[in-house]
Image (cartoon, rainbow over all chains, first blue to last red; front, side, top):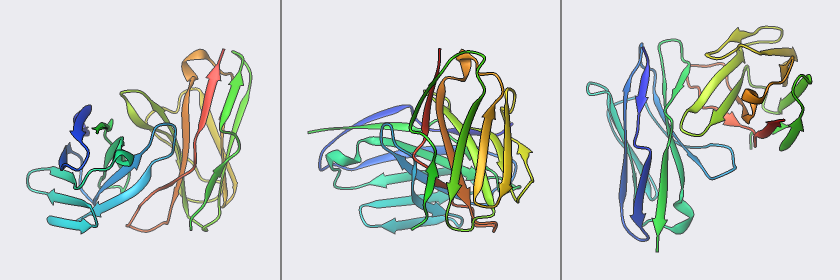
Length: 109
Length: 113
Protein backbone atom coordinates (compact mmCIF):
# COMPACT_ATOMS: atom_id res chain seq x y z
CA UNK A 1 0.00 0.00 0.00
CA UNK A 2 0.91 3.66 -0.14
CA UNK A 3 1.95 5.39 3.03
CA UNK A 4 3.21 8.78 4.15
CA UNK A 5 4.52 9.14 7.71
CA UNK A 6 5.19 12.35 9.59
CA UNK A 7 5.14 13.22 13.30
CA UNK A 8 1.77 14.21 14.68
CA UNK A 9 2.94 17.19 16.68
CA UNK A 10 6.13 19.14 17.39
CA UNK A 11 6.95 22.04 19.68
CA UNK A 12 9.67 24.63 19.13
CA UNK A 13 10.73 27.99 20.49
CA UNK A 14 10.43 31.34 18.72
CA UNK A 15 13.68 32.17 16.95
CA UNK A 16 14.87 28.56 16.88
CA UNK A 17 15.14 26.01 14.05
CA UNK A 18 12.86 23.00 13.57
CA UNK A 19 13.02 20.05 11.18
CA UNK A 20 9.85 18.19 10.22
CA UNK A 21 10.46 14.76 8.73
CA UNK A 22 8.41 12.86 6.18
CA UNK A 23 8.97 9.28 5.04
CA UNK A 24 7.04 7.72 2.20
CA UNK A 25 6.30 4.45 0.46
CA UNK A 26 4.40 4.96 -2.76
CA UNK A 27 3.83 3.24 -6.08
CA UNK A 28 6.15 5.42 -8.11
CA UNK A 29 7.41 8.91 -7.40
CA UNK A 30 6.81 12.10 -9.33
CA UNK A 31 7.65 14.74 -6.78
CA UNK A 32 7.09 15.70 -3.16
CA UNK A 33 5.18 18.73 -1.92
CA UNK A 34 5.08 20.53 1.40
CA UNK A 35 2.03 22.60 2.29
CA UNK A 36 1.30 24.84 5.25
CA UNK A 37 -2.16 24.91 6.78
CA UNK A 38 -3.22 27.33 9.49
CA UNK A 39 -6.12 26.26 11.68
CA UNK A 40 -9.43 26.59 9.87
CA UNK A 41 -7.80 27.60 6.61
CA UNK A 42 -6.90 25.95 3.32
CA UNK A 43 -3.46 24.40 2.70
CA UNK A 44 -1.03 26.67 0.88
CA UNK A 45 1.96 25.56 -1.18
CA UNK A 46 5.43 25.82 0.38
CA UNK A 47 7.83 23.74 -1.68
CA UNK A 48 8.31 21.08 -4.33
CA UNK A 49 11.18 18.57 -4.66
CA UNK A 50 11.56 16.11 -7.50
CA UNK A 51 15.36 15.66 -7.50
CA UNK A 52 17.58 14.76 -4.55
CA UNK A 53 18.96 17.63 -2.56
CA UNK A 54 18.05 20.79 -0.76
CA UNK A 55 15.73 23.52 -2.04
CA UNK A 56 15.96 26.79 -0.14
CA UNK A 57 13.31 29.47 -0.09
CA UNK A 58 13.88 32.18 2.47
CA UNK A 59 13.47 30.83 6.01
CA UNK A 60 12.13 27.52 4.67
CA UNK A 61 14.14 24.71 3.08
CA UNK A 62 13.08 21.29 1.90
CA UNK A 63 15.30 18.25 1.39
CA UNK A 64 14.68 15.06 -0.56
CA UNK A 65 16.38 11.67 -0.71
CA UNK A 66 14.55 9.45 -3.19
CA UNK A 67 16.65 6.38 -2.39
CA UNK A 68 15.65 6.62 1.27
CA UNK A 69 12.05 7.68 0.67
CA UNK A 70 12.68 10.63 2.94
CA UNK A 71 12.16 14.36 3.03
CA UNK A 72 12.34 17.08 5.62
CA UNK A 73 11.13 20.63 5.90
CA UNK A 74 13.48 22.96 7.77
CA UNK A 75 12.13 26.15 9.27
CA UNK A 76 14.64 28.72 10.52
CA UNK A 77 14.22 31.80 12.72
CA UNK A 78 10.84 30.58 13.84
CA UNK A 79 8.09 33.14 14.24
CA UNK A 80 4.78 32.80 16.09
CA UNK A 81 2.96 32.92 12.74
CA UNK A 82 4.68 29.66 11.78
CA UNK A 83 2.37 27.86 14.19
CA UNK A 84 0.41 25.69 11.75
CA UNK A 85 0.12 22.18 10.40
CA UNK A 86 2.62 21.11 7.76
CA UNK A 87 1.46 18.56 5.21
CA UNK A 88 3.72 16.30 3.18
CA UNK A 89 2.31 14.95 -0.11
CA UNK A 90 3.88 12.66 -2.73
CA UNK A 91 2.84 12.42 -6.38
CA UNK A 92 2.68 8.72 -7.28
CA UNK A 93 3.13 6.99 -10.64
CA UNK A 94 -0.27 8.32 -11.78
CA UNK A 95 0.60 11.83 -10.59
CA UNK A 96 -2.00 11.50 -7.84
CA UNK A 97 -1.07 13.24 -4.59
CA UNK A 98 -0.86 10.96 -1.58
CA UNK A 99 -1.14 13.00 1.61
CA UNK A 100 0.37 12.57 5.05
CA UNK A 101 -1.80 13.32 8.09
CA UNK A 102 0.16 16.48 8.81
CA UNK A 103 2.43 17.71 11.58
CA UNK A 104 1.04 20.30 13.97
CA UNK A 105 3.82 22.72 14.87
CA UNK A 106 3.44 24.69 18.09
CA UNK A 107 5.71 27.71 18.58
CA UNK A 108 6.32 28.92 22.12
CA UNK A 109 7.66 32.39 22.99
CA UNK B 1 -3.24 34.72 -8.52
CA UNK B 2 -5.09 31.47 -8.81
CA UNK B 3 -8.40 31.68 -7.11
CA UNK B 4 -10.49 28.74 -6.00
CA UNK B 5 -13.78 29.60 -4.35
CA UNK B 6 -16.30 27.43 -2.54
CA UNK B 7 -19.97 28.26 -2.17
CA UNK B 8 -20.11 28.21 1.63
CA UNK B 9 -17.65 28.41 4.53
CA UNK B 10 -20.05 26.86 7.01
CA UNK B 11 -23.07 24.69 6.42
CA UNK B 12 -25.47 22.92 8.77
CA UNK B 13 -27.79 20.24 7.37
CA UNK B 14 -30.06 17.56 8.74
CA UNK B 15 -29.68 13.82 8.27
CA UNK B 16 -31.21 12.70 4.97
CA UNK B 17 -30.98 16.08 3.24
CA UNK B 18 -29.40 16.42 -0.18
CA UNK B 19 -26.39 18.71 0.01
CA UNK B 20 -24.62 20.55 -2.80
CA UNK B 21 -21.11 21.93 -2.41
CA UNK B 22 -19.88 24.05 -5.28
CA UNK B 23 -16.33 24.91 -6.29
CA UNK B 24 -15.19 27.36 -8.95
CA UNK B 25 -11.65 28.05 -10.19
CA UNK B 26 -10.60 30.91 -12.43
CA UNK B 27 -7.28 29.68 -13.86
CA UNK B 28 -8.50 27.34 -16.61
CA UNK B 29 -7.16 24.32 -14.71
CA UNK B 30 -7.81 20.90 -16.21
CA UNK B 31 -7.93 19.00 -12.93
CA UNK B 32 -10.27 19.47 -10.01
CA UNK B 33 -10.50 17.55 -6.75
CA UNK B 34 -12.74 17.12 -3.73
CA UNK B 35 -11.22 16.12 -0.40
CA UNK B 36 -12.47 15.75 3.10
CA UNK B 37 -10.23 16.47 6.04
CA UNK B 38 -10.75 15.00 9.48
CA UNK B 39 -8.47 15.30 12.53
CA UNK B 40 -5.63 12.80 12.49
CA UNK B 41 -6.54 11.44 9.06
CA UNK B 42 -5.18 14.03 6.71
CA UNK B 43 -6.69 14.78 3.33
CA UNK B 44 -8.72 11.98 1.79
CA UNK B 45 -9.67 12.14 -1.87
CA UNK B 46 -13.38 11.72 -2.59
CA UNK B 47 -13.56 12.33 -6.36
CA UNK B 48 -11.53 14.05 -9.01
CA UNK B 49 -12.01 15.19 -12.58
CA UNK B 50 -9.51 15.59 -15.42
CA UNK B 51 -11.92 17.14 -17.89
CA UNK B 52 -15.45 18.39 -18.38
CA UNK B 53 -18.05 15.67 -17.80
CA UNK B 54 -15.31 13.32 -16.65
CA UNK B 55 -15.03 11.98 -13.11
CA UNK B 56 -12.97 9.41 -11.27
CA UNK B 57 -13.49 7.89 -7.84
CA UNK B 58 -10.96 8.65 -5.19
CA UNK B 59 -10.33 6.74 -1.99
CA UNK B 60 -13.69 7.35 -0.27
CA UNK B 61 -16.45 7.94 -2.88
CA UNK B 62 -19.23 6.14 -1.03
CA UNK B 63 -22.16 8.42 -0.24
CA UNK B 64 -20.97 11.13 -2.64
CA UNK B 65 -21.36 12.04 -6.29
CA UNK B 66 -19.92 14.83 -8.41
CA UNK B 67 -20.72 16.88 -11.46
CA UNK B 68 -18.50 18.80 -13.84
CA UNK B 69 -20.58 20.40 -16.57
CA UNK B 70 -18.19 23.32 -17.10
CA UNK B 71 -14.42 23.40 -16.89
CA UNK B 72 -14.32 25.94 -14.08
CA UNK B 73 -16.96 24.34 -11.85
CA UNK B 74 -16.89 21.09 -9.88
CA UNK B 75 -19.78 20.19 -7.61
CA UNK B 76 -19.88 17.66 -4.79
CA UNK B 77 -23.25 16.15 -3.94
CA UNK B 78 -24.23 14.30 -0.80
CA UNK B 79 -27.32 12.41 -1.90
CA UNK B 80 -28.57 11.76 1.64
CA UNK B 81 -26.43 13.39 4.29
CA UNK B 82 -25.43 11.37 7.31
CA UNK B 83 -23.77 12.39 10.58
CA UNK B 84 -20.53 10.63 9.59
CA UNK B 85 -20.22 13.08 6.72
CA UNK B 86 -19.68 15.93 9.16
CA UNK B 87 -16.26 17.18 8.09
CA UNK B 88 -14.19 19.90 6.41
CA UNK B 89 -14.54 19.67 2.64
CA UNK B 90 -11.76 21.10 0.50
CA UNK B 91 -11.82 21.67 -3.22
CA UNK B 92 -8.59 21.94 -5.19
CA UNK B 93 -7.50 22.44 -8.79
CA UNK B 94 -4.30 21.96 -10.78
CA UNK B 95 -2.94 22.24 -14.30
CA UNK B 96 -3.15 19.13 -16.46
CA UNK B 97 0.60 18.61 -16.57
CA UNK B 98 3.11 16.47 -14.75
CA UNK B 99 3.72 19.33 -12.32
CA UNK B 100 0.65 18.98 -10.22
CA UNK B 101 0.72 21.58 -7.49
CA UNK B 102 -2.80 21.83 -6.19
CA UNK B 103 -4.48 25.12 -5.30
CA UNK B 104 -7.10 24.94 -2.60
CA UNK B 105 -10.32 26.72 -1.88
CA UNK B 106 -11.05 28.02 1.64
CA UNK B 107 -13.02 24.92 2.61
CA UNK B 108 -16.57 24.23 3.71
CA UNK B 109 -17.15 23.04 7.24
CA UNK B 110 -20.25 20.85 7.01
CA UNK B 111 -22.16 19.75 10.09
CA UNK B 112 -24.86 17.12 9.69
CA UNK B 113 -27.26 16.91 12.62
